[in-house]
Length: 425
Image (cartoon, rainbow, N blue to C red; front, side):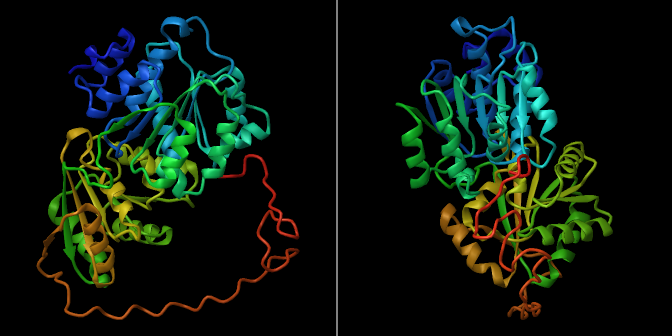
């Protein structure tokens, strides 16, 4: 099958061809006809399967074809709402809309926290056809009455599983309540837990189901290996691997924000140009680091799990698990950053004694044993060294003028205040 067989507008086929694509991925082959026909959709798809184009292309077609043809003007209120869990993913989806809609007079906008709200308000006033948003910032706009959701024709809930993991379920329900009853709904999720299915049952009407990735399976195009070593040798081992293997674009996962920063500094000192991205970095710093990584100016990008959700690089060759995640499903998400769109990739996990339980849980989830590799000089010792003592955590000093135990922005008695535009979701 070719994109020309899917019945998309000539302008969209031209944009796809200019990106170098000819054959749609499995999810695109199944999702595009269903969306074009106006059906609700429930799609199970890992990151890297082409799911974003799987909904942006038919949405662009529907907005500009037949009874919905609006080629002569930009909508004053959004006609499509795409809800994403992270800022990075919102940026990625909106970039996809602009890329594939470049030959159509469609206006799109991404709104998210961590940046000023006033430029977003100005853009919304000028008119937007497709609005991509994170839940917190969208509700900020709703509260300030700077966005009108009454004209939404198509609603997309992207990475629904991560939405629930991040605690957005109440925000999602608030947003859904603001949408017109008559609309098309598309839901995408890497996994469909009972909670996700419950949400889907209330959102979707007789949906077409598309399942291109069996639940919690790792990408078949990714070679997965484990290097067992001691905890205190990991940094030295990672620098050794960079030096001996000629790696040029590597995504490295750390478990904590502090650990990501420390590892990026270590790599930099070893002459491996690196940066860290995580939730405490400003949006500008995260966008800049991601852009430099995509352009090849950075050799290594060290990320935490949530910060990496929006990373979309077609030809990323390597993912390194410097530390294994506590949740085995996150391992599947991590290695899904490589081996995308049919290309081959390699995922290497550095595992110490302490992480053997996590490794066992991962192998149980993906139903396979991972190959062990021994690097000479970095062999794992027979027994784990004791963990360094952690400093005791004493009670934090109360801030002046605030009773101890009361959170920032909270009134006495526990009522939480929300200042417009301050939530970085």
